[in-house]
Structure formats: structure tokens, C-alpha cells
Length: 302
Image (cartoon, rainbow, N blue to C red; front, side):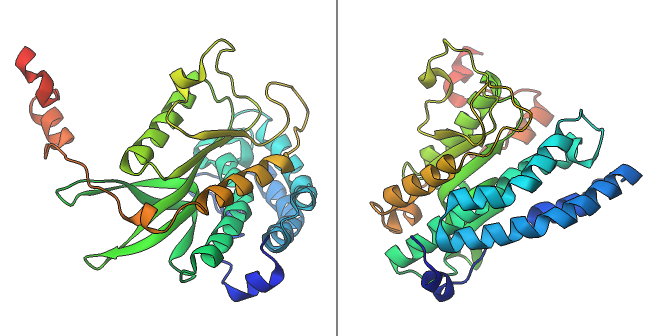
């Protein structure tokens, strides 16, 4: 448990305002209506309880109290988000307020993981960092090319190479709202696979609501077999409710798995990454010039 003493020893790196700032300032050319402005006022009344609950749970790890604290706003968000596409600021898919809410509510979990691993690994506070919609390294080639990916949540370790700072993933989490169908599940699995190909030690979660809709007869390893963990964050899957409650047991489960797993690892497990061979070919150049890309191993069949 991360107690109040631990919290005082290390800086709390969590951004508690990411979601509400997006609600108030969506950007992207979105024009707020009078109804949106009224919803924003209601959100600003409810959000202080969310902020307090997030800070409290980092200290005490009481996830039932945490969910109780954020539920009034969560119910408000859920009601607005399910009134139909583009009917209000919460229901406008391009703004991605829904994913930002998932990223926000899981941040305290990964902050607790971060704090406990700082204590366990005895590393500098600012090296073990929280991921909140942050870019991390996804692949490293022998030629020195480094590929990055935006990740919704997790924990990373900062390394400096050639004067540049990179975040090496330790725990990564992808948040998927709405209906997580077979197609989306396999897409998330592909993300997990790319991280695992770079470094098999990376711990990967996919977190979604209660509408995971892969076929009941679909075998797990055909759609989610790369080694990730899939979490239903609210209600029971495919049980319809006016407001499916967030499940505190799932939040605790993710913390426990993360901490217990990472305690079997060292920082070197996440920084000593073996670079992969790469072709040296730029995909866009091939497509622009030839109109196709064919791997070297298949060119003999042209």
C-alpha cells in the first residue's frame, strides 16, 4: 500500500485536469451550443469530488471509496454520452471525451503502481514516469530508428540517448469505449504484439466498458493471443443497465497484477531492448513511386 508518508516522499505526477480541460476546451473546430455550455457548468460542479477522490485513492488505495467519489460525475457523463452521436459535447466522437474519461479514472491506479515501484526499485522519482496519453517507444531498429506510439495509460522509464529523452514502456494500457467487437479486439492485440515484440517484459492491458462483443464461440488466442490482459471496467459484460457502475475490484486487480509482476523484474528488463533488423525501405516512398510494397522474401514471385 502507498501510504501518506510514501506520497509525501515522492512527487505526485498525475494530471487530474486532463479530462475536464478537454470538456471545457474541446478544440478541433467544435462549436459549443447553449446546451453544451450548460453541461459544462454542471460538470464543473461535479468535478471537484472527482479531483479529491483521485488524490485520496493515490494515498489510501481504497477503490470502493474512490468509485463512490467519482460515481456522481460518471453517471452524468454516461447519461450524456449515450444520448446519441453528436447530440452534445460528450456524445461527439471526434472529441474523444469518452476515452479521456477512461484515461483519467485509471491514472490514479498507474500512479500507485509508479510510486510503489519507485520505492521497490529505489530509482529517482522523475525517471519512473506516469503515462497519461503519452508517447512511448514501440520499436527500436539496429539502424538507430526509434518508433513511438501514443499510449493511454501506464508506467514508463525515461532514458536519454543522443540528447533526446525517450520513455521505455513498463506497463501500457489501451482504453477502448463503446462496442469492443472482434475487429477492435484484434487491433488492440496487434498493438500488444508490437510492444511484446520489442520487449516481452512489457505488461499490457486493454480496458473497455461492458460491450465486448466478440462471438461467444471465438477462441481467445485467435483474437487476443499476444499476451495482453483485457479488463471490463464497469458492470457485467452485455448486461444492459441505465448506468453500469465502475467496478472497484477491476481497479484493484490491475494494481495488484502490475505491482506483483513488476516486483519480479528490474529496470534493466525494460531498458535493455535488443534492436530489430529493418529493411531500410520507406513504405511511403514505395507507394508513391511504384504504387505497391512487396517484402523482399516475396519479390521472387513477381
